[in-house]
Amino acid sequence: MNFKGGFGRGGIMLEYIVGLLLIILAGWILLMATGWSMPYDSMLQMMGWFQNNPFKSVLIAFIILAVAVFLLKRPRSQAEESYVSRTKDGEVRITRGAMSDIIVRSTAEVSGLKNVRTRIKQRENGLELSLTCQLEEGLVISKISEEIQEIVKNGVELYTGMPVTEVKVIVRSSKLISTAYKK
Image (cartoon, rainbow, N blue to C red; front, side, top):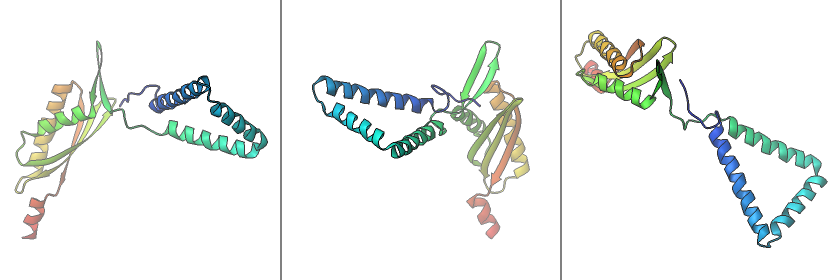
């Protein structure tokens, strides 16, 4: 699975931090250029305080550094997960949402199937798909599961060109099934 990002992991945050620092610097320069001496005086006072309080200055520096490292190393979920298929002309990326749509649409022709949810893992030799679903009352689970596996495998391979190594079907109980056993 591949993820997009500006400068890799934390790259988007780095861009925001650098942008924010540049805006602050530009504002400070503009204030100084218009004759307002407060930013300059404040900076001199702050520099003097740092020189007169070395222990507190080091402590503040470490706290700022720790927060910056935490913000830059924290994983980002903004880039959408995608699955890669290599072709002779390059590669094709299919987002997780598009792949889930293909799987759910493939199962639409199976009658009695409800609430299909998908989990997808890309391995070296192909895709491993897990479908969690509910069935209407009276359906034979083994027969429907085999039908779902065949339809999903064929549909995903047809529309994506990616091999499917395994299709797991997990049947959850539904209200219809659970009420049938209570009678």
